[in-house]
Length: 496
Image (cartoon, rainbow, N blue to C red):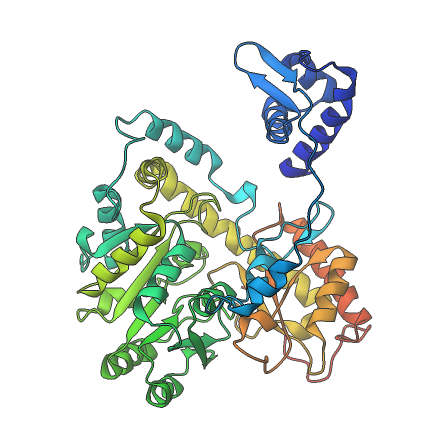
């Protein structure tokens, strides 16, 4: 049982026991409750916090935990049908087609009995929880931690990101960097700053649904540019710029989500040349740089490191490699565009909370951060290998030709005619959560796909069980013959 489910079970037990106590009566001590329920003090503390948030108990430091007084009974909801007219009569630009469903699907936590091959964040066992806790404690003791930070971010953190993005040559300065509340916030700021409502924005196809949601919510028109094994098709990119006169192209050159491709060296040069000729910006979402696998060759520098002319607006987040709650990222750019980015961010959020920035500084400046990244690289390689091995045994015809050596997922092409929605629903009934490919395309998908994540489970045993359950769901939905073979079978990929 994972920690989240343990807390939920204990909270349910304590909730049932509250009927034994009068309002205002003190509950047994923490030591007694820990012994009675055979849980850790941390689990008990989180369960008590859950009940306190529900208004069922009151925690008084130094005195104990008491049953809360009964709250006011909520009145009957009135007639809210008028909202249907009000919300549809003159909707905000882009609100109807914001497409949050694809984002919410990957943020939904499945029940404990379901194998999670859907999530986009590290399982707790992969997170540097001790390093984060120590960094938070040290940050809390820093003078001024709770005072207001500069709107652009702490100078020391901006300087660290400038060196991290620019590489050994130091092509970026702290003055080129803004601190944002995670990569999603950075993408929102970038797209709202660089394109007016109604304008086209070029995107890779397929691409990250969260970016498509941001673009549509801003009233922009995503225009797809296909991706192949070497990244975005630069011949079609040039054609798309000519046809649409777009001024923004959003891409993920490194371990692209969802295909896992890495932009080839020749196309890196072409992307910058084509965008510069079109007078356009390239928004580089470098989300997976800290998710490199231990057997990966040296990574290419980001596009921003080879960009003296200010074509690239770069997004670098620490969230994926650390914790979903460490929502810290950097937005870097050169030239007058930085002031526009800064103005948009200030209007939207004022600034990123200083305690979070101070904690990040403490984390990345400690030896524990480098040790975590090394351990994570090894764990990602192990999990990728385990998932590929399980697929080779259960689903050999769906093995990708060239599994990525970074990132946290596989992109699977289903047989023609498969109903990916039926497959994902059937998989969930079988006890495994996977992601349908449709939301990764700007319009109708050219073929059925699934995305399988391998970072949300506690270990490799769950990955193997998840693939076994998925095979049964595929066969059940006629997306894979029961004998584990398929028309147009591929040669199994060599195990990395």
